[in-house]
Amino acid sequence: MPRASWIDHHPWIVDRTGDVPLYRQVYQQLRDAIANGAISPGDRLPSTRRLAETVGVARAVIVTAFELLLAENVIAGKVGSGTYVADDLPHDLTRRRRRPSKSDVKFDVPPHLRDGFLEHATAHDDRPFATGRTLLDPRSAKVWRRLTQRAVRDIGPIHLGYADPRGAADLRSAICTYLRTARGVRAEPDQVIVTTGAQQAVDLAIRVLMRPGDEAWVEDPGYPLTTRALQAAHVRLKPIAVDAYGIDVAEGIRRAAKARAAFVTPSHQFPTGVVMSLSRRLELLAWARERKSWIIEDDYVSEYRYSGKPLSSLQGLDDAGRVIYVGTLNKALFPGLRMGYLVAPPELVAAMVGTRYLTDRQPASLTQAMVTAFISEGHFATHLRRTRAAYAEQRDTLADTLKAHANDLLDVRVPDQGLHLVAYLKRHRSDIRLEPIARQSGIIVRAMSRLYLAGTPRQALMLGFSGFPPESLRPAAKKLAALLHSL
Ligand SMILES: Cc1ncc(COP(=O)(O)O)c(C=O)c1O
Image (cartoon, rainbow, N blue to C red):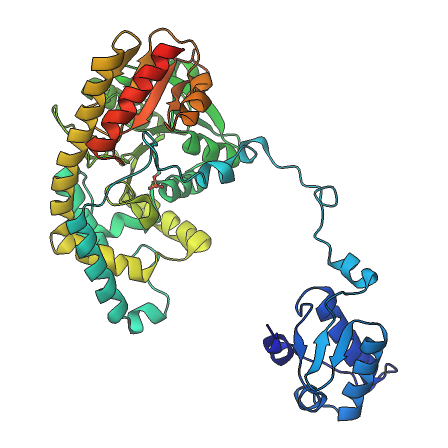
């Protein structure tokens, strides 16, 4: 394909006052463009007349430059069809185009950025029981399509400039109303900052609150991407054990009373699924109030509570302004949406806004328009009702099938909330060893023992049920049971 655009966009600066002849300057610029790949082998060059006009020199200058390139076999003339970059470029030219090899570039990648992000993120495994998947039923998908079309059709001045880094006022107001009623969050729209998800919200909180060397409590086992983000900020991790009531606050106080923050998932501890008890919540809040520490409440899956008494958010119990509440729409809708939010205590809002502005300016205006319409026209509530019922059925199908076929091998915990369940291994010693074996049989299991930082790892499989209808969960669960029996 001709790269006329390069010829047209290149600045073509020629110096008429120096010693270097004009043809030599044009020759060099063309040769460099071919050497660095801006013009590729086989690309057609414009006529000498046109190029002379573009560069602003006499045609003879271009003719001489072309002759030099022809003599070096960098370009070739084809009678009647113009001049092309040679298909087989001379060796000295292509040598310069070689991509730098790993040994040319020395960069010491820090350990927390080393392992497998790309592999993990692009695995795209949509087989049961992959975690982090959701379903969009046909009716919600239809509404979503309609609202997308409407948002695109209505594209106008609002999208053509920069806007409030916190997100659109009507969206923040809709989120606020939802959080007040559904989660008991105490907030005004001014405190809401729309992000690309819980991950960005946690990262913003870290950037604003944590300094290198500060200590932070993290749940053990816990969510690995929060841990990594803290490591990236050179925070000293204080892994605190999780028991049947949530993070062990007394242990946290014993080990690191002065920690600057605690990162917790109270409504559905990741990965165990434990709900933090009310007394633990009060203990945690008391510690933060006393020590002037911060609590980052990652309420990533609050929408999916199926049974049991709901506990409202930690933020709603906080009367000292120490909680940063984090939520996401990437679970309630779908992870590709990339939209979440945080609710900051009033005195942190300015710093959060500034930090968001410096890292990502503002949320995407088109997505905000779609989501605002989805929530304010009542589709979100309907979608949640439907998916909650569907996911509850999926959870039960998975749990019942596993209990029926592998009760002797698995201790299946049926969570009241969330999008995955945890099945503790009764006999097999290594959950990590099971991962590749199951994958070969077409089943995705996630080893929970990987997620321990300091505590003795428990061997368990995390099984996602939200992304799969009962008709695919049932045979997959039977297959997993048969596999475990066969080992
Ligand atoms: C505990 C926890 N926090 C945060 C996230 C990230 O959510 P988001 O996709 O909104 O960034 C996840 C995703 O799986 C999660 O499990």
